[in-house]
Image 1 (tube, rainbow, N blue to C red):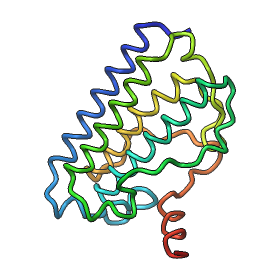
Image 2: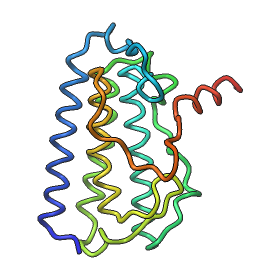
Image 3: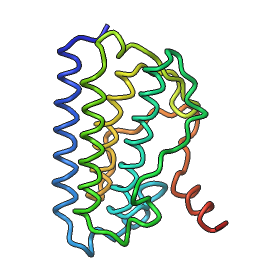
Image 4: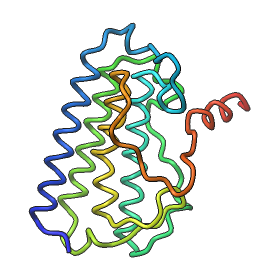
Length: 184
């Protein structure tokens, strides 16, 4: 069962990884924020601005998944769509780093409120995703700081030491988004 210490550790790691991500993003010039690493693949082909927009979309989506698991233990998350945000990945390159970071900060406030409003026993509730499998609420929430670490490294042009544990092959979100955009 989750303990207050585990939840405090979760929030501390979320704060630390987010601070590292913010430092990485704010260290970039406007020109560097639009640069794509040479020989990059998949999400690594996104600019830093696109990475930040992606993080916002995913945090909002993870929040929806956590809410579903809190509402129904064993919730099937397959029917919960990706959540929209004011600046989606496709429009991120037309915005400033500060604007995207502001949106991330607002979303994080919501996430922290969600955590603070969750009873300890409810961190053991489960959501089942076709992409990630069966995870407890606590495991879903731990993915927030790991996701920040992954994309923070990519923003700096490095390979992350964290890779998500997908069920099967990692979905190429960048390619899927480009296909959707080209269809119009």
